[in-house]
Image (cartoon, rainbow, N blue to C red; front, side, top):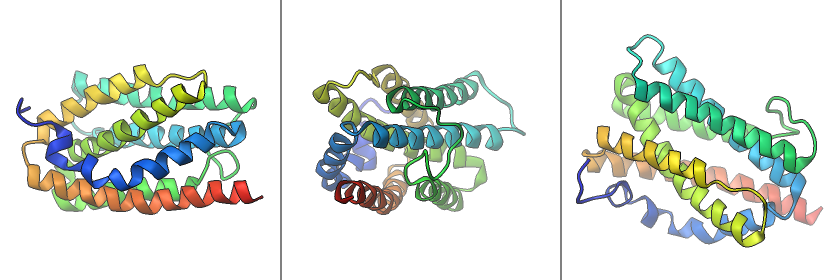
Length: 214
């Protein structure tokens, strides 16, 4: 990885997402003060992390598995467990599986991930898809979890994402080292993800607006 440029600078991700920072923070601030909604939100994150681990497993099944890939796979699965465990703790009930009742915006979340995977795979080919999908997903995860952690701290919620964030940051560095040198492609794929994220987040905002109006 080049020491002169970061994945954030190379991708333009932070600049492209400045318009989302305030609404995302406001959404999270409302969510963490509503335990049932917070639990459903975390179970949705658990689902997305699980989908990520499953994607790694399936895409690398017929390839030589490296220690790095197995570490990435195990950490994604552990992140899914982390969010599921804390969702059940905060919600005060079991949240088995991922259903419309226990996971916020389950179908839009799955569609976001599926379209991102398909779009990037079409652009870079199946052979390179794992690295590029991982890189783009890690950018989003680090961006979102940093804001989430700040909201948790300011709200006094007994939940820390710091250890999880450290692992996501390392994944981001690893993936950027593998394919971050192609800055034009990185910016294109990051912009594609941002467009999908914007549509997905609009659905999430409708969910919390509906709850507040009820």
